[in-house]
Image (tube, rainbow, N blue to C red; front, side, top):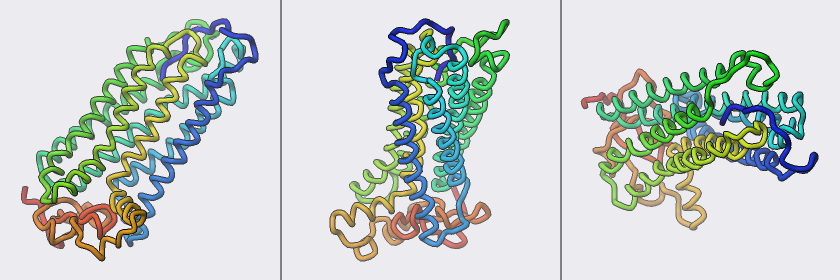
Length: 343
C-alpha cells in the first residue's frame, strides 16, 4: 500500500465509475469469510478433540491475525464507501480526505495481519520440530519477522509529518517519506521471509520415515504456503502503477492484492494444523473408511523414530514428543510421556 500523492483532476466524467472500489469491497468480504472459516476450523478441531484450553502461542497468534484482518476489512470497506476507488478530483478534498484516512488505517492493520500470520507459522514450527539447528533457524526467523513488522508498522504510522498530512494535503508545511522505495523494500522483505518459511521445514519433513506418497503429501500441505509468496510477488508488480498522482484511485490494484495476501496468509498458516481434518473430508468424499479403520501411515508404530512436539497436548513446561501422529490427536504428534530433547 502506498501513500497518497497530490490531488489531481478527474480522468472521467464526474459520477462515472469503473468499479475499482467495488472490486476491493467484494474482495475484502470474500477473503475475510474464507479466512474466518479456516481459522474457525482450526480452533474447532482442537476443541472437538478434547484439547480445550490448550491453545498455544501459534493459535493465539493466528487469532490475533484474524481479529486484525476483520479490522482491515472494515477499514477497506469504509474507505470504499467514502470514495476510495474513485478519482480524487471527482470526490473533492473533504471526501477524499475521509477516504484516505480509512486507507491510512488499513495500511497499518494489513501489516499487523501479515506479521502475525508469519509469527504463527514460525511458532508452529518451533513446536513440532525438535532439531536444535532447525529451532535456531526458527528463532532467527521469529526475530527477523518481529523486527521488520515493528519497523514497517512504525514507519507506516509516522510516514507523514504531521500525521494528518497523509490524508489532507492542504496542511501547510507537511511532508511524507518517499513511499515507493519504502513499500517496495517491504514487499521484497516479505517475499524473502515467505521463501524462508516455505523452504526451512522441507529437509525435516523429507527425513520422516514415511512412504514416499505420504511424505510428499505432508510436504505438499506445508508447501501450500507458496500461494502467499505468489500473492506477495503479484502485489509487488502492482506497486509501480499504484504510485500515481491520484491517491484514491491509482493504489487500488495494490490494495486488492494486499487484502488477498493477508487473508491467504491466514488460510495457509492454518493448513498444516488442519491436515487430519482435511484428510477426513477427502476420505469421506471418496467413500473411504475413517483412518482408525485402516492402517494409519502417521501412527505411533509407523513413526516411532520421528520426533516432534505434541500439538495441542504438550505444555511449554513438558518435554518433547517423539512420534508423529497426524491421525489421532487432530493436528500433530502424540506425546510420549517423559520425553526429553537429546538433540
